[in-house]
Length: 173
Image 1 (cartoon, rainbow, N blue to C red):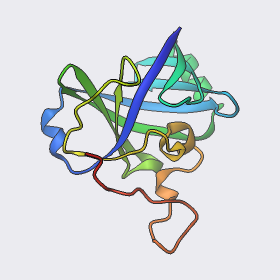
Image 2 (cartoon, rainbow, N blue to C red):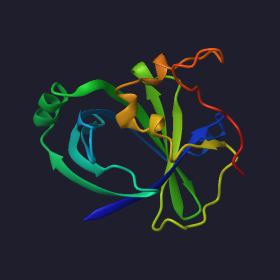
Image 3 (spheres, one colour):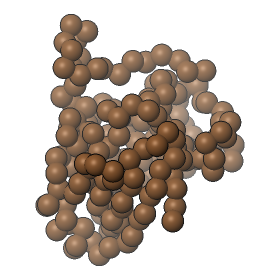
């Protein structure tokens, strides 16, 4: 069994782009995201597919089980999804002995950019690059399983609107 420990941050600016060492296109959908776990199907670079079961977050760590599946089966499962499809390009940015994954969303979530880092334990100290903004690890609205139900493009952009919170961009350093 695998446990995922990750932290999430909003990204500010474009400085990180000079540090990119790799990229992957991702298209994913959720078959279920209620209760104790979410079930996701993902297609990467248009030629590889996985089925993933993730437990609901418990602080920073959570159970994650991932299985390769045939591409044709993934495409059929995507049609059975709940909510919209997540479309994003994931950029890899090394920082010390860790690698940041920066997701630049497109489609209904265009405009959202989130950096994630996977850790080997919850108390690991990490260097926070200058291009990071607010930490959103504990905020459900920044998880993909939420974004399929309420895409970023539908969030209120006016301070007087209260339907959804807009992202706050403040420093966490």
